[in-house]
Length: 334
Image 1 (tube, one colour):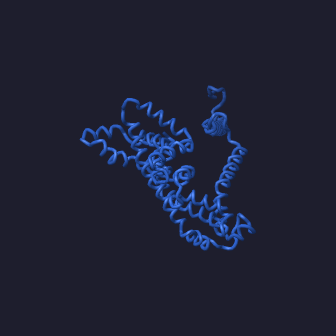
Image 2: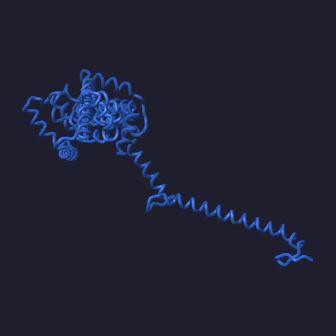
């Protein structure tokens, strides 16, 4: 009888072979399952390790974030909803109905009254607001982009000092400069004129700095050098190259300036005396101040006029959203 190396016969080895193979298979499967479990655990641990230090995934934190977002949304939307509802009511509905829900629908009657009151002065205020906000934003965009381009792509003595002055200037409250501007414009005859509002709207240090940030990321210095080598002048380079590359940044500067100018209150209140020169913000404030002294209650007119005054802002925000969304993202990355 032949003895195998293991000390068992071939028949015994043959009979033990299948069982041994099955045991090995089970062992291998268990090994694979163990390795797979360890791999999945490792992947899960690696995914958790990607979170910032001190941050853990918990249901409580997600609920708190969700509650905070809901409260912020209610805080932002509730005044607008109240204004929309109030603009559809008459005086009796404002006094005796639920302030957050509709009553009898009088919106078109209120709009007609607003447009006809005091010989249609509301339309004059609306045109003044479009002039001050639109022209001021356009001039601010051109000046800011040009100044930001100079601070970003030109080397001249005092460049860093100028940038420091710009940064320090937009830290000052604009209301702090209103009275000195009024005294200055009174001496040169610009008080109570449209220029007394447009000139301060044109100069905005924050927009200059924002434009510089956009130029740093959107205008390659090599392209400017190639244009100079080809014989292009600086004015042509600015209008034909820089402004085209700065479409997103320019639109963002224009939009932010337009919204700020449209809602500006203290500067027009200080500079303008004539009722025919007021923007909507001052006109509605004047109506609200005399609503109890007038022959008719102006509360409905003030609320309807306030609702009408936000329509141009909504339109321009929706029309330019593809610019300001990408523009704000680019600015945040820089």
